[in-house]
Image (tube, rainbow, N blue to C red; front, side):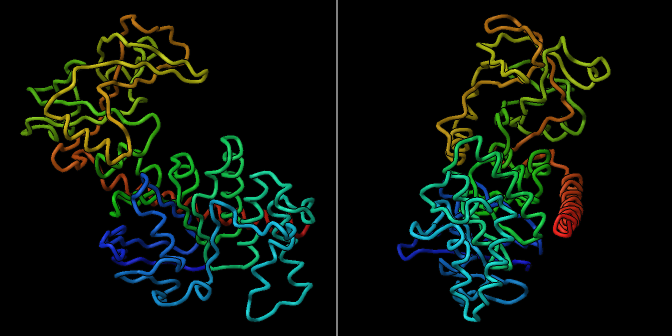
Length: 420
């Protein structure tokens, strides 16, 4: 295992295009780091520079305290799991898993190779498939073989390049669970590139959000979600996405297209003195007023609106409310949509409701918004003016402690299983 440190990493291609623009990131020994962002943000390029498949134009890359910029990939002791599995079709599962060991300069004995393959197969539930060829395996099984090949190398770190993108939704869920459990058991430093938010939020100890080659924020999933540093991170993290609504401070309230909102002093203060701000409102900040706990009611604002339609998903429900678009913010939101790889950010509020709500589209509804949770963004800079950096850091510190605890438990359980 090893810590990986990136300092002002730059990648500029021969045609002058700069894909990665001075990224600095410290990945702790045993940490599971996710690199995420829209297409073309530089996440895969950054991963390929770490493993050595792309040259580093500028900056320093250190693995376990040693600068490795000019060290070839084979000497970095990193294992990479690719999107397309990269298995040899003519070899069996056992032979595919063992293949990296055949390339090692110091040859291992046949019995040691067999032991390593067996241990990896047991971890990945592949024991019954060791004599089969890749063509006869499912997508999930092939990906587990690719992971087995990484495990037997006993590398300092695992690097994953969108390994689950070729699998269907059900298999992705199963593989996420297996990857998370395996990483905890091995305690191996891991870097994982994905465009899938669910993977990013469920797998990572920390998530690094990139935009156009620039690192926006690196933090625990909870900190990214609850304390985003800017409007890009807020819009990228979360599904359904955060709502962005224009607002103006007027006296003791905020004037918005959905009505006048009574907000806490800290929120009002963030908006004061500015002609216009953008409110960030996640769907779960709302509720059908009929289902609001009376103890909570005083912490929010009620408003009336008529949704165009509702969506009932069994355990949750959403209402869609159109509002008047502010022409002064259109260019800002159009640019944000482009950055987020979306066609547009429509003037539609997505509101979460209790699944038991009977409100239907085109019916006037009474809603409640928890104004304690509201974010205020500066339209010019995109900065989150209500971010509590100290509270955010606490969330990330808790994630670090949780990671260490989970690794200890997983490794203890693995040792108990092996003895049994």
